[in-house]
Length: 420
Ligand SMILES: [Ca+2]
Ligand SMILES: [Ca+2]
Image (cartoon, rainbow, N blue to C red; front, side, top):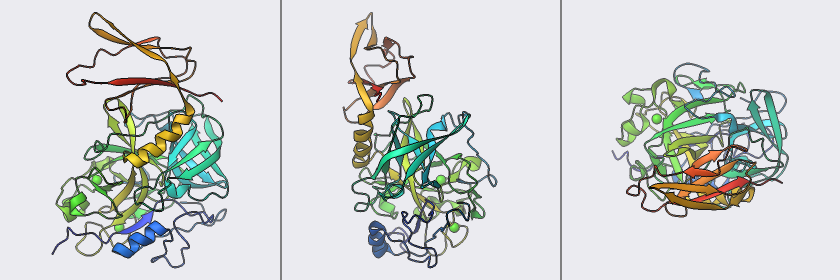
């Protein structure tokens, strides 16, 4: 039996339909094969769908239904102003469509843009509001515009979108950088925060309680289509999808181990799985100089047939299933993001000074706004080297900890946030 051929995986997309007809779902009455987007249909023809879960929520009648957890039901709540896994998650937000919760997202550097999934912002109609949950309460900022990646409905793995806010978010709220270093997100711990449905891995997804939750997982495969093959387990540089599995800690529920011969038993109590309403949620990895967003939540899946790592026969966020996220470091996705956030940033002149073996960066200007000092070894992918909040940027920054042997060439650039 060749189980390493394309898996006929069943998929769902992780936003919640709120009657606005903007999601990937048409209607819930006939949940089988009811996905409507072109890209999904194309993939459906290629590999077929075993089952498709569709959530239908009537606005104002039923509550829309965070992240499904492994240790117990409803755990891992991410409280405002309380960093989790070393990440200040206050920049992870709810997206409201016409006043109703629809998706999750993350504030990007510059403070004017929110990163989410393409299918959360592909409908040009209606109104979008971004809701920050702060210690002081909710802060809502209206969207000025929104757009999905130009290839969203054409090239699988382009499920990424940007919301432009009508005004810049307060500088006290953290902003995040996209990961540009392709391949560095594979087989390392990652950290997700989202506002989707709550649930326990034993029984799967349940209702939504409005809380943000955080947890861990690991990307173990990539894909150029909505499916995993043995060739893409371990990851290919060219693929735009990222896949993880939902581990119980037992080999029998280890999706990649059981079906693809790549054992990894997960993160125990901290292992989580995205579900409805987590669409667009950021997945962070630790880069050498801080956290960066490696993926945004797009959908979930299970391996069809039997035997199966899944606890049951449904795409319902139980242990043994697979998650599929959009790869941010894919050059086409990374460029899409950086080109837009660049509009909210302004270059600051910098200079280099070398004195008695130490290297210093002179940062010009008054800098009353946040300052981002970025470094790159290839002039394409830029990492945050240092970030300073309003008025905290020093005139000079010592950078001599970098060994010439490790980084033979390193370029620097500095930005501040544009004030409109
Ligand atoms: Ca896993
Ligand atoms: Ca299942």
